[in-house]
Image 1 (cartoon, rainbow, N blue to C red):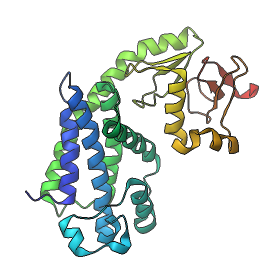
Image 2: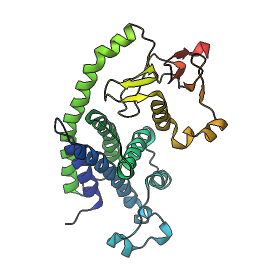
Image 3: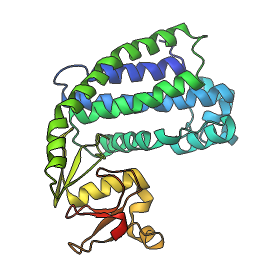
Image 4: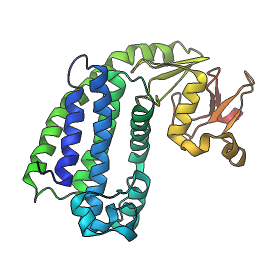
Length: 288
């Protein structure tokens, strides 16, 4: 069977969407939904590079040649380098989408080399978050007019994504009463976006953290590690790098090194200076 690069990308993405359609997808379906989602995204990036210059999809451009290109027997460009080339050669910056894509890439790597445990809500939430990138990138940077097969696949993906977006909307709606209760009763908890499902529903309770959306139940260290790696990058979490540019501090309440300095406007309640992942305390700007 002959699949071109764009059709192959959309075929993977369509399969990811379909794997998660049932009410109770199996572990295998959840796994392949995430793996195929990432494969499709990578191919979409490579498609745009190839439209610019076919040599750009080679890991080592000095070894780029047409024979290897047509046989497929070469090492292709990796994610980080693909983004660099898109920016340098095509003037395309994925901007705010990077955080979501990098998180999906990391989970896909864990699936292939280790193991992870993700719920249906968590994986669907990631799929919907990635859909924003897929839609924007395709509409802005990919020419579908010359490939009717790929165009039909893309339309099919859009139709099926509606169901997943509806699932997210209903689930967000269903947890609002409990979120409002926590905020209204002024619990000593802070709510931030979950590093697993990306929804604004992770409750820092002190010692433990629970996400009302995807039901992730994390100890405070795991929650802090996942959140900071997602927001700051993997390399920034390591202690050696944090010495040079600290952003985790000792909490004045519990005396654990777990106080993270948030950007203004990034949490609920709004605009705190810092939040402790260990005890859940929020320290307002004027006191930090």
